[in-house]
Length: 147
Image 1 (cartoon, helix red, strand yellow):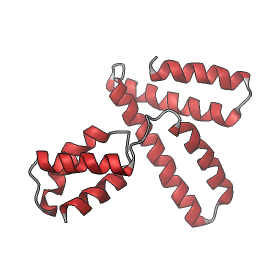
Image 2 (cartoon, rainbow, N blue to C red):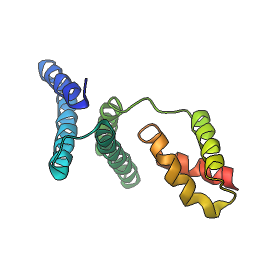
Image 3 (spheres, rainbow, N blue to C red):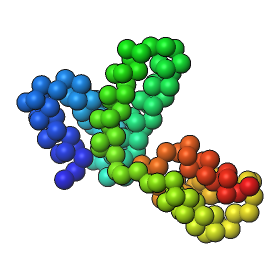
């Protein structure tokens, strides 16, 4: 089942169950995916859909951080709820151990020896963990292994 089909089914269920917050998030995700498809003038691949979801998840995490810093507890609660719904559509996240193993393997593949090779490592690594790991965590692990 494609992501859009899953979103449509979940949207219908949320309407039936009168889950306003969930319905709002699903509609937003659907709109983002459809807008991206219009922009590219083609149906999205699974990888492109994952990119859109990752972008939406990152936006919410950034918003959460900003609202927490500003002391806006009303908006913090709303964004946390949205995060839960968006994360439900993301693939299962890799553990730090699994990411570390992939980082080590990628460093060997690109023959990286120092932090100067960070760009090459990240370029080769990110497609492997796309949507399955937080970019900042991956970045930190690469820095640790290259030092």
